[in-house]
Length: 233
Length: 285
Image (cartoon, rainbow over all chains, first blue to last red; front, side):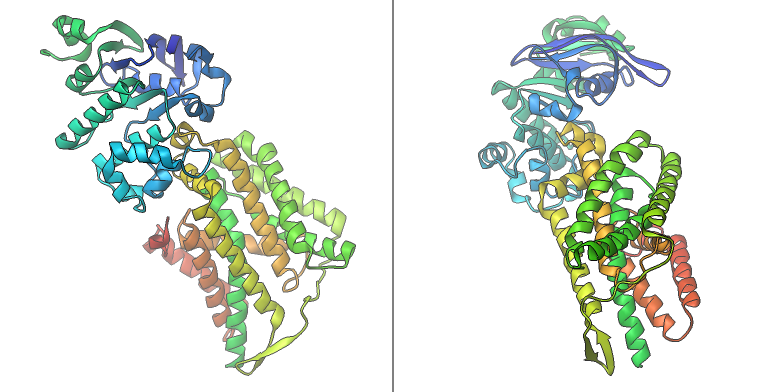
């Protein structure tokens, strides 16, 4: 479904991505893990066309995403929930939800989204900036779902969220994946990532250094220690 | 007392017209990070287009459609040819828009001529208000400006493009990642900015002179409104334009215009020092 082949990104003189190879299959839930600054967010930005690639290809359902404008990528079925949520605080909840739709509203889709996040329905007219951190994360996920994505890319969705809401967001991500939507998750919380995602990619110095199942990774503490800096899992 | 009323009313109406022009400046600055030194000339082009429409068709009223339309097309072209290649480079944008300002002025000087002209108000009658015979056209100008301002804010709040403009203004990258064609939004924003200034030019043409340097005085006033209203704060900019022009009008009733302008500059300096986020921060949305 999503296929990154030898992707390179330079920012100024820095060689941030040094040949990333990564595949997400249809319906799969995959985690991209690594220490801070190894290039996880840049990888996601390269997929979305927000970071200019200096080499390699990003294909989605066999289509080279480099051949379309970045704003066309969400319409091809790739949803993005950026780090820090990226909601528009000056827009209402409803405006945030409908922002990517070509028309004004999609009532059928709204019903589905409010089924996942009922709290948003109560706050439709409220500005996005007045929501709590957890509600903003729900809004970011809901906004992405409004576009009927086939693949959702999530960049640290539980960062800075109350523990009670972390489990709700984790549940919703699992439910979305169970509904057939593929997931590529970047997460600092390794426990959350390994619980959610059967497939794991580990990144180090701008390249994928491990590609395997979460189950295998749990049995290789030396790899976890080496690439994630954790002593126990 | 009659003089105070007259100058205060004139100031208020002039402020509404300036608000139209300053709004264009504010949306261009807010969205594209462009300090547009040619914006006063967009207004001047509007006055000249009003004059040209009157000369070629005999009807001033047609200019209310022709000038904003031509302004919109010119704005879209200028964004593509001049602004787009230097986006994200604030210093270059100052140089480029200064050059654009000179090009517009000289183009008008060559075609229209260097001598300032006048357009007679298309409504000649007056109305007796508070002991003064007040020009009906000025009241009409105020109504047009209020309708245009109201229409613009409705457009911004209730249309897809308006919502996109507010989203791109907040975060271009996230907006693109949500499927918003930011490039197209930039073009339309610049085009709307030009169209608003051109409309302001048409409304103001029978009140002021038609002159190739007509935008030079307008620009600092618009910048003052943008600063006092709060950078990027559109309702604040409109409110500041009206407030400034009204205060200048009142001051002019007791002293000369230069002192009134100095008072505006003092007000702007005070705002920059004491409330750099602008006088009308609460109006931001």
